[in-house]
Image 1: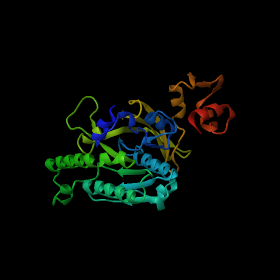
Image 2: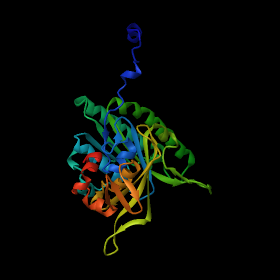
Image 3: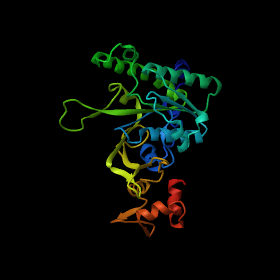
Image 4: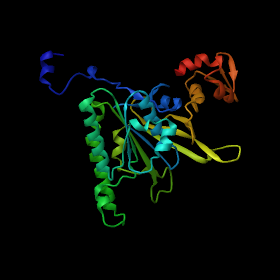
Length: 323
């Protein structure tokens, strides 16, 4: 293209000059990494918004915590915006969070949450222009608009609710351009609500912000778990849950893929749970009945889970995963 033309286009350039990969942050689960990024080692993209949403007690905050843990391992700035006022520092520290390196705030409204994010991003960039920033927002469903917060009663006025959707859309329009420019990964946690009067099909919907949030997402992850998937110890006490993650939107890899996860409450996510099934889907391992095979070696699920990191027969598979 003519250089003189480019010189006149002060705020434009060539598509070939675009920086596509600003980096990523692993999720703490190799299987989830794969369905998000197409790579067992990579995770949520920097420069985009990732939403994690689902029913109550489906590990949404735990996933966000593990993303922050992985970000701290890489030396990134980490921020937790806690509109639920329920984040447990003792529990987070037990999972691996360095509380001394986590910026923490509890804003009162949606506007306050996004204003804090913007102000903090700009403040960090005044002293450090390169180190990525990772923000977890838990949760957008709980944050009221200022109009709701200042209301004198609790009548659930629909027009006030509609105001929150408009405010959320306005906040997203303002924060979204900053993410790529300032190397920020924003992880938003959301809840599910039931659509009133719908009798057929999926009657659930993300709780907050109308439909505007969905259009700004780079990655959208739905977490699912059931009471039948609770993990019991020898005394039949619940010690964790198992569930699935469904990738319902993805701008960095192939969407609509699923993986399994396992959460042990006092230990966090099992990074290898769901990995074997993912290796089967990716064609590295074959499955016949209850037996798996890789390069002529047969094994079962229990053998893989117990010996993946130490058994010599899994050496090549460890290279595939990158551990």
